[in-house]
Length: 381
Image (cartoon, rainbow, N blue to C red; front, side):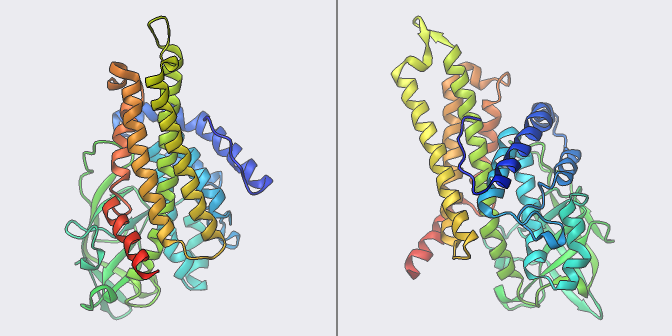
């Protein structure tokens, strides 16, 4: 990775070194074959969990790393540089733990959070529905109170880790009061009536299983509701602010990987008697790619520092997600162009990076939604 990091502590330096070592030795060698074969690498998440890399944002009291966003987001970037599917999955797992860690009671956190943070359990986040992606307040999945339980019926779409996760953080409607009628639940994977549909046949991130989860009269104990009834959408939106920073970091790692592949190729491929990196037209393209990657990194780190200082960062998180994922798509596309015909083959990872970058402009809120969020913040300023 061609990057010089400025890290906030010696502990952060050691953490990045550990992550890079694991990513280089364990993740990168598996990535190409697993993506080709659409193999979900559950063992890699277990490895990262046991190394403490799935719990970095959360309290040491419950087994977390208690690292600032400025540090743990750079860990996400290092993971994504080696394997984007694992980078996205790491961010998704952190997102799944967010509601319990930030809105759960002390009793709930003590009961469930240590296992969730250890990496022995893998989480999935259930917000989107087939008809309600960008508009979560329109969700129809319903949780009906029945004594000391809730019974959940409906379907959740585009669920990363679906069918492989050990627990699901689920947003479901508990009343018809629009966005104020949604609540949050922690649902175990072995709950009766909870099933996974066939995995989606995706363009990219094929090593990350994505599916629809069906809830057919799934009974959940009332003590598995996180927060108050009707608080679910507020919890979800708060979680997404942090999740968008995770995706921004992942997109930056992917873009850096694409840039490095392009640079390496441009240094060795010769035309007209010299390496193509010495031709101004291509060299300027690489310079623009490098500027885009550095911009992405700077933007997500600026938002992370606001978060670490307890300041509002929702607008900045949307900007980071928008800029980083648009830049990742541009850099990955240009990497294919730099490699020319070779870039269009699977002999090099550039075409995979291009396919993987596309979805990052879509999930965690499309980039059109990010523009809407940013504009609303500007109107309120």
